[in-house]
Length: 145
Image (cartoon, rainbow, N blue to C red; front, side, top):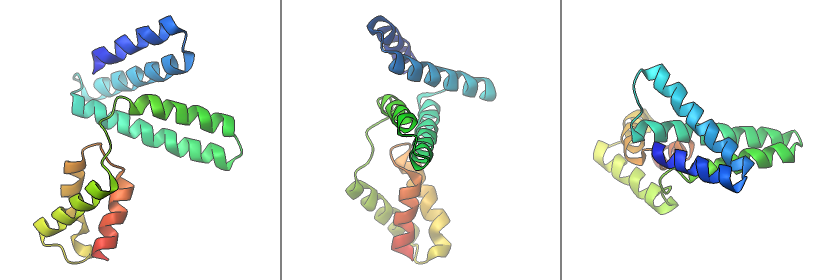
């Protein structure tokens, strides 16, 4: 994946795509920061976690910019989200998420909100960067509540 980032960065330079180049540079910097923090090269799963966190941060920033009437900055953040998402696995559909929650509830024998932590532990591990945890949490609450 890291090699793909370098290749995409070169392609963006050649094409003069400054927005894409900026987003890819930001991705590489975030990966390097995390590698320094952990003291080792990131695995693909660790890189996916970094990318997922960046997507969430960009979406939050875009929402805040839009609320403040700065649609230009919100659009810029959303453009970065699109670039980042190209490196993430395909997100799970609503049906797949519902099925995942149902199977985790059945597996744990969960029957109330007290069991939410156990269910979320299983769901989080199985979704692995392919779902918004806030959305998953809402589904689990709806099923258990």
